[in-house]
Image 1 (tube, rainbow, N blue to C red):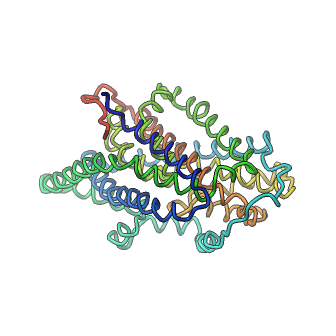
Image 2 (image 1 turned 120 degrees about the vertical axis):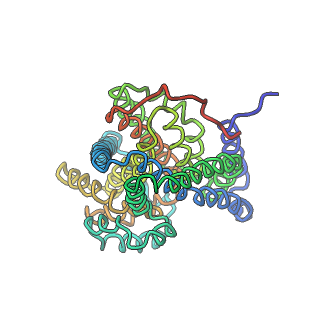
Image 3 (image 1 turned 30 degrees about the vertical axis):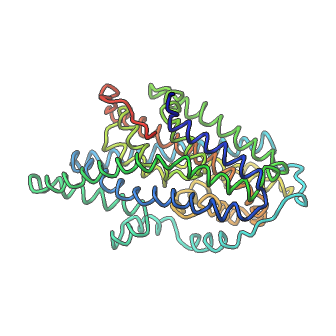
Length: 418
């Protein structure tokens, strides 16, 4: 009998989770049994992400060793991220204007969710300026940054450390060997942890459906359909065009990432696939120093699905309250999102926090978020999958831009932990 692939196992877990959640809808016992399984899986992944990022960046940078080349790579990467996320915001605003998902929504039919914890986080973040956010990329204590999982500070420290190792020449070779061994060991650990993925997916989706039920989607069905339809358009048309310009095929990328996309979609966490994205994009032909820098940085600066959703949701809330936003107000909203979506990167519940900060600045009622908080998990699954595609494509585009893409170096098939 043929063994079921990892993608098949995860999809099966997703399907069974939806069935169990629907059968036991409203039963709190389901969450008490399943949530620990889902939490263990997410914690296992989070446990290995930081060591993999640190080790991979240090090895890659020490191998390149040219600060000018790294500066050029960083500049190209940030320009690309800014252009693509701005397009995502524009696509989200246009979709909201074309389909009007918030027009005619009866707010009395919607469940209201408490968003007090998000408001607190947003207020704390709004007191920080963009300049302050940039300053905090430089850690005063790298160990503290590692403990807190502050990805941008970790990336900065790893870049500096890698350059230092490269500068000391022969003396740095044992250190490079140590971090190369660490990276290899962590990638092996990733493949072992992925065997637990179907159970984690089953538990997490089961809890979600048992809490909110499939019926919770009906009053906000137009929003869900608009968000998912726009995201599919963005991936196939916008990212597809970018891939074509770079001489790559978006469908090939989606096929390569099928396991990771199902996993990211089911768990609504892009962290679950970070190690495997770096590994797969390297095997696709992007060099290690590019994948190790571009993909982790993209997790803070290139969240295409999240920025698209934030733009669409902001206008949805305006429509829900009968507020007719002028072109000028929508352009202002776009400019605010361009800043807030970068400045609050890495905060838990980031899309919600960004929306709170944006709605307040744009003069829209933040209470509107309480109506969509109940289905945010369903929307989060879609935007997480788009983020994964966007960051994977970014590694390929930057590698092509640098003239360093080499698909012929694929000496071994991409392994599947099944």
